[in-house]
Structures are given as C-alpha cells and as structure tokens.
Image 1 (cartoon, helix red, strand yellow):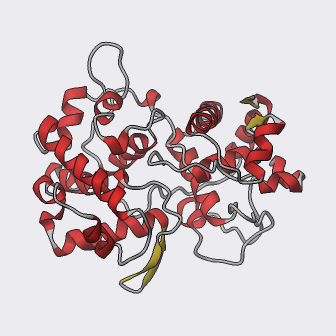
Image 2 (cartoon, helix red, strand yellow):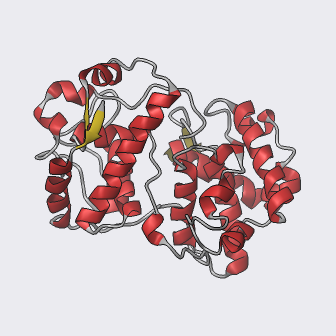
Length: 324
C-alpha cells in the first residue's frame, strides 16, 4: 500500500547536510524568563495548540500585521491574554463558548463551537487531574515522553480530547514549543517524533520519501475524501520517514519538521506548488530557515514531484478531523 523510500531519504539527507540553514525555530514562541513565566506561556500555548487543527480558513490582520493559520490563532490568543490575564485560568476557560471564540478570532476561521468544547474539556481535565498546573504533567511523567513502566507525557496528554490523536500531533507540537520556552524537562529526547500535519504530509509525499500505490495516489491527487483509518496509516508512515531522515541527516526531528512545514506554507502549496521560486521576501520558510525562495525550492533537484508534473498535484488527506 505504501512504504518508506530509503533511497530517497539517503539522497535528501546528504542534500540537507550541505544546506546552510540559519534556523529560527517556532517564530512567535517566546522563551520564558523564569518558571512562573514558563507556566503562563505554556498554559496559553497549550490552549492554542488544542484547537490548532485544519486552520486553513484562519487569516486576517491583528494590530496591522497579516497572519494566517497557526500564526493567526496564536496571535489572537496572545492579544486576548494581554487584555485579560485571567483568560487562561481554568475557571474562565471552562466556561468559554463558541461565541467567545468567534469574537477572539474576529470572525475568522470556523468550527467555533467544536473548538470551544475542546477548550472547555482541556480546562476541566487540567483542573481535575493536574491541579490546574500544566507543569504537573511534566512532574508526573518525570520528564519522559514514553516509558513502559509508569505514566509518560503521551499517556497523560491523551486524557484531553483535543490531544487524543493516536499519532500525537498536538502533543509533539507542544513538546517542541516547551523545549523553546524552557523549564520543561525532557529525559528521552530520542522519543521525540514529528507533529504530522497536512503541510508535512503533502511535502513528504511530493518529495517521494514515501512510495504510494496507484489507488491511494489517485485519491490524493483527485482530493477524494478518505476514512480516518487510512489517513492515520498515511500519517504514520510519513512520520516514520521524517524520523528516519532526522537520524540519517543528524538534524533534530523538530528542525526537519519546521523546515518541511514552512516549505508547505511558503511554496509547496496544496493546489499549485511554485517549485522554481516565489517573489516574496517574507515567506515562512525564509523566516524559519534564513533561505530566500526567489530562486526556487532548495530540494527540487531530488524531489519526485519536480521531475513529474502529475505528482505536483498530490494533496494531503481529505479528511475531517480534530487531530491536526
């Protein structure tokens, strides 16, 4: 059905080693100055991450700056928090309604009532199981992402409906954020995986890091709806391919994720990738990697979709989900 293309991973690994990335990880996420600041920041980011799924319809200006997707969601929440620090308290978040979320997002986006319900559940579980303290997850897990004996971060985050993805997209994104914020202990960084979302899936498949059979390829090219079970299988092999690329290239998996994610937002678009370049000085890719895309995608010489125009029409899974 599908399998990892180890030869392509080896080629891309060598290419990545020879590219001078000046990485600025997770722009918009600030490092904490002390443990109290870390708790406030990570609580805010925890709620943003909880509803960061299928955000293609989120966009607009906030204080004169245009944002889209994750950035719009993040900055909308930051603006609300600056107006009202109690916004992230469990007692207030337990009462948030769809109308409140629509106001905070200034009418941009969609599925406000579904997202508000997820936020209420997050606040309820955070109070019930973790004493209203996001760092209690870190304490109970003793800093372990995975472990056979005892509770780990993946198991604990699964208590929250928003973080129930079997592939843990939102949890791994939170852990990447927590690494940057600081004060969050991770004792087994080798167990970090990539938060597989639609950008990462699309870029990975077009590059050819995963071989798909013709039937699935056709579904993705034609943007046909697929069941959640198939989507999970595709995302799992995509995540495994990215993890293998991380190991071979000796570049941390969260950095590979940021490179591919930003590429998907900047040039490898869903409907029409601009492989030979975009005339923009302010792409997400340049902000994160320091590389201007005017001269084209830095990976195109080994990308299968660059060689085969039909493969440029591969899209991410067409599935309705709260997972990513």
